[in-house]
Image (cartoon, rainbow, N blue to C red; front, side, top):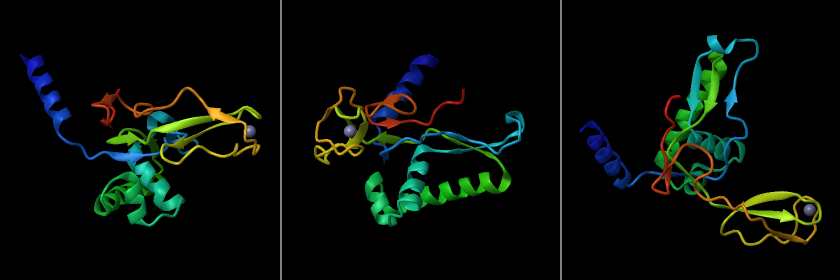
Length: 172
Ligand SMILES: [Zn+2]
């Protein structure tokens, strides 16, 4: 009985429209810790992938909140909340010497196309809708082609839910 109820709830969850945040890149590192403190003594701050993306867009790329919100497919207000939360968490980690872990969040990955250069073997990814690149960004050769392993909406964090969102990861 419990299991049936649980499944029913799950279906209900999937049917509800979600507020997906579009993310175009995953963090290269997802764990940062202060040096010299054993892991067992560390407190962790969890930054979600959408918060990470907000920091990347607003603080690193220097986009206005309107533009960043547009890229993440959320309203300006929602973006404001995401970036505020991200700033608080990063500040908390820095000021209080906590570890910062990046995971989870209700996100969808922007679909990417992968290209490869025959000249220098360099490979890179571009979002759909940007057109085929003219030349290799590394060696400027025009001898480039689409690589097979295109990435859909599923690579990255969590499990796929209804082809769109990822739920926050469960605690291991
Ligand atoms: Zn090249």
